[in-house]
Image (cartoon, rainbow, N blue to C red):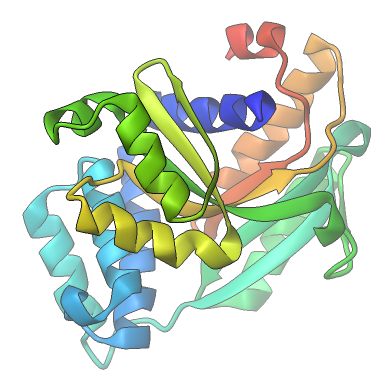
Amino acid sequence: MSGHSKWSTIKRKKGALDAKRSKIFSRVIKEISVAVKEGGNDPDGNPRLRLAIANAKGSNMPKDTIQRAISKAGDKNAADFQEVTYEAYGNYGVAMYIECLTDNTQRTVANIRSYLNKHEGKLETKGSLSFLFDRKGVFTIPAKTVEEKGYNEDDFLMEVIDAGAEEAENEEGFYTIYTAMEDFGNMVKKLEEIGIEAENAELQRIPGTTVKLDKDQAQKVLKLVDVIEEDEDVQNVFHNLEMTDEIMDEM
């Protein structure tokens, strides 16, 4: 699953280097808000909130900012965010799956359509591209966190395999663990049981097949991805562009 690992590595590095931390925090705060609305403000009894808090910490969000987000989400006047997804083709036939949290779906779809039209893309009907992506649980865990808990690599891998890990890789100081969507919750519980906190844990859409482009074409596709990701309503953009070493070096 090296291609998948490469995608996760890109997301991690991009997040670490992203100067616009406010955008990252905005995404996490929205997820906290949805989690509180869905299951209350007690993380012990709300697994989605517990996960959102863990991801907030992984994004280096200050503790007081996290607490303010939880308190604000419980306010009766707080915005109600709706989860919506859009499927599209970008430049050169690259498929895109766009996940959003929005309080105004008309605004969101109009913006997404506008970005695509300006970059030679096209919005597709819901469900038309979902077959191109597998929804997987993806966990990113610093290797040093595992070592600090007294686990060697073999013992740690046995623990996560027991919880449903389909694949697990250790590259560049990070473990990347993949689970089937239905095993996502089991892995969250397992990591909690053994006291290991993931830097990031989320359901990602992993492409089953990829489109290979040259460097210049790929840069145009990635420019569109960046434009879409900048929208305040967008949480994630998944695509099936093959991320070659040459393209990664340019990033």
